Amino acid sequence: MALRQDILAELAEIAPGSALASARDTRDAATQHTQGSYDALFSAENADFPADERFIVAAKVAKWHNANDLAAHYASFGLADPTSARLSPALDFARLLTFSPVKATPDALKSLVSAGWNKQSIVTLAQLIAFVSFQSRLLVGLRLLNGKPATASESAAVAGAWHTTPRTQSGKVAPVAFTQQELGWEPWIAAKPLAEFTPDEQTILAKFGHTDSDYFRLLGRNLPVLEQRTLTDKGIFYTPGGLPRAERELAATVASKINGCIYCASVHARKTSQLSKDDNAVEALLAVPPGKTLSEGHSARWGAEIESAAALSVTPPALTAAHLAKLDAQGLDTLQQLDLIQSAAFFAWANRLMLTLGEPYLP
Image (cartoon, rainbow, N blue to C red; front, side):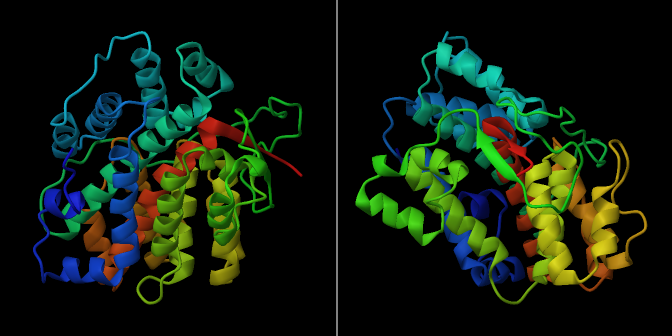
């Protein structure tokens, strides 16, 4: 299998030496490890989740995002039978994660188990769907930044619904509103015990501070993908220059409001407040009810950023050149706009894992 290097640059038609190419070079860690995540998901041998199955799921997810060129790329590698007893529930799971991850329950995972999927292959499936959700949005943003046409849906960029059930599946008290409070998270399928990782694998987990986290030890059932995903995250959010860190965290919070992910929003709203020193604005954002726009009442700069992040976060994405023009008007250069797009797009990935593999609880 010959996967192409930097598939996003190719599909976004980014010319070497252009302003966008320079911005991506400045964010080389994010660029490198986004491609590394793609390689880890699609190049590795995996008897429990064969390549032809991976490609059909990826092609479907890209198509659902109106990323037709990306869908064609995945389809070009050959596809499995989508109606098979094993693959049909996987595609149902993919549709759920793509369009309404907040509606996920443990029953979706039980359906996969009944069809022969084991814990590792379920984690890989969830990572793949969530990654292509990120990749599709990033492609839209890159094409628009590059002055190329991109398909925009008419999806309303408004706050999504969220969980209001007062108890988790295990009986813990669950949050029923968005909050900046620190939350716990429990998986619906077992995290891998630390003792079952090799010493080298434990070193990788420890390097990122993941050893004590059920969430990361669950994702550690496919450690190469988790490693590349973590490095992508760090490349997007923890690099100097460009968009202020508070505004990258703002984009993550907006995406989490769109997707109804209370856990992710709690982490990144808290960081936005700490870094921006504007707790009132963050609380106002968290309080927006379902079906309402998120940008009202904010500064012109935050309003433009919130509108862009929200438009990119709906499915299919609704981001347009007009959104970027508003960012231009607020003085955001190419690198800053790239930071905003990558930050919002990444949480299409993060939210989908958090919402479909487990749930938050109040400690």
